[in-house]
Image (cartoon, rainbow, N blue to C red; front, side, top):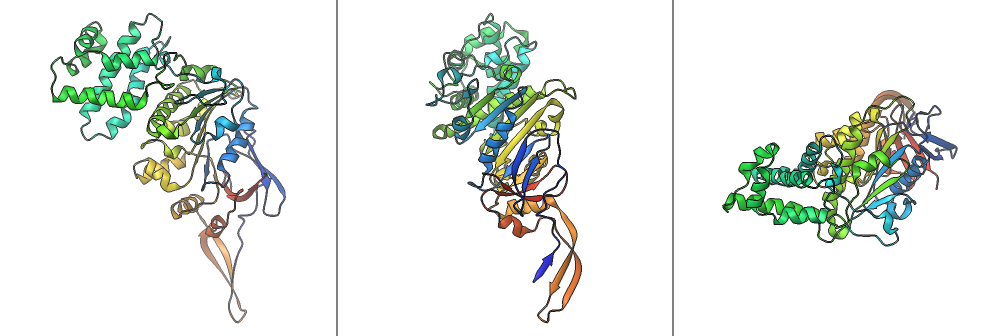
Length: 429
């Protein structure tokens, strides 16, 4: 029999008070406890059905108390559109969702993201780059998707310049991108010195190269802007960037459609990156400024390979901007897969969180990650042998005993705080 002097079941009495996002529950002795999360990004980790989504819903209740908070939610399972939608919130989904008011189901406009900006050409180029990023990274011949990106950017630039302040809908824009002839595109490009670099990528003579570029351009747009969907709609007018600035006190829920998973995941990645970039581009907040940009990313490890381009920036540099990530995924191997199997990228992602709430892990990689994050310490170990002799020695042992993680039940978690020791916690119903 081995007895260790572990403090894993001791909930700290001194808690951070930077925010009012709290977790209510009990300690091992059934004593009521309230843990206030640090004013940093938060991660929830654990197998399905252990309480991650329920905990996020409780966190959202606290976030709603701040009228200066803009909240963007990635909804993989439609849990949040059912349980967290409120009047005044808006929903972006591939197709309309039954039960959500029509006026709340907005249609995204690509060109409106650049409207009234002092440098619209930069915004349009950034969006074109985001749209073709996965195609470029996943291609063996990167010349095709890179060329397709520049040509699509030229179409965006020309369409914006010729709009006279009335932005065409996504349906009109994509139709133009798919049907414009090389001769017409060349004619339009000649009008703008800013597009001189694109001139040599367009030719009226059809050959293998030009055909490959056209096919790559069409493939990416068809995957992203599904015909007759809310992202290729004739009445599109919603701007993500505008919501980031004007949506205080409200939530934007981006819903994935499992039936059209590939298209939904790609458009969700694009929209989230636009929102993250916009939140990061603002000035640093004053000390007393309660403005916050909360990004709730439940099951974000299911996004396309490579994850969100601006996620690391958000966690590393977003604190001074008021930007916080509330992320959740099931196991560490899933996060590693998101980054193409690159362990260092997965570790960098996880390292950006302040508090980590660990529910029951169901794989060794997750347990190893948690144990390594918590580290080791010297503990006094008492061993009683068969002759009832007592032996005491000091050993280097994990701060969190592996058995504690293995024995976690539904509603129980080990919290790794931003500051202080990890501790066991049982959430209230």
